[in-house]
Length: 263
Length: 265
Image (tube, rainbow over all chains, first blue to last red; front, side):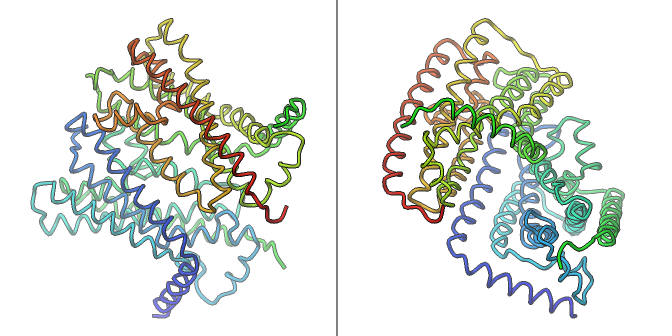
């Protein structure tokens, strides 16, 4: 209960902060719309030339784009800003302000993961759901309850995996504040915009299981377009849980290494 | 405008040395810029499979995109962002007092940056060339025409970026325009698809607007996608846009400096 109350307090504090910079609103709006338009047009250009690529037709690729936009929006809503405030450029560890966070009487991992919110991302979420909805109507088959349940579970697994990767990347700040693993991951994450099936075989495997960006978007989208087997769904959930446990362990190991830079 | 070339050269050398110290940061940036063309190379190559798309085979598509990655890196304009920051932050004051045009300062960062980025991008492109077996059908014409096309593309993109950045003299939020520009470069400059593969409306826009001539055109030239008429028309458009941009830069610079009142320094 206390955790929920804290989250509510963080949200309202972030909302007030955001409202102070009104000009940023229009810039954010423009960026969101451009991101949405280039994603759609990029896909449109490809499928203007071919009908299907490795079994992925326009509707199922659109579903992947929808999941990508949705997941990115949820990341931008809370995970991204929070972890940036910890480990980003000019974040707490750089400035030496992390001591104050450590002293708070809450679990540190919880605090650094939910502290900052960017409510504008709700608009991105809307655009993502819009694309996802369009894709579903274009798929031309009725969704069973199993489809939807599998989709939601796979999406949850994808989000958990994304959180684990971001937390692990942020944790590396305790070893070397100059490591910008998060930035490298951001670049690779761009690949998740399109189905893994659009990439050559070796890259497909890397993107599913090694740097699991395809795992985050392609598997939930496949749950909608063709359905997932119980086995794959189970493996996905287990995989995401392992990643999350690993990231949490890395974060705690980092905390133990942390030697204050201030005071 | 002053013409202190020696001072300019010394500055270029100093800037280059300082950039080499922050290599990993720039490598990560360069990696980010490679991503979009890489993604679309893989997608188009997979889509082509054993057949052709719009007359291009898989190998030709890979050759086009590997060239594009290099051209994009060589012509990439950082001035877009950095010059605007100089003006907004008031650091432009110091540069205006130096006995040479501030254009030298930007040119120095530009050249220093290019060398650093290329020490990262060139090996990667070579590695990908070995792995992905691109099909380069080089002819005397394509080789001969590539260098001038590349040089013009770089000049055009550099000056265009500089002129746009000068908007910071008037508006604190010129970044919005730059975001639109990035989207247009993605769609129309040959990144999402070679110009030939674009749908008709976008293709017409690509041929008319300047963005293709900053990135895509040199890559199309080298990989021999253009016939004689298209080649000539391309060069004419490139030179025409360069002239327009030069004029734009001069007008913006004169007016901008006149009404620039600095804060701090």
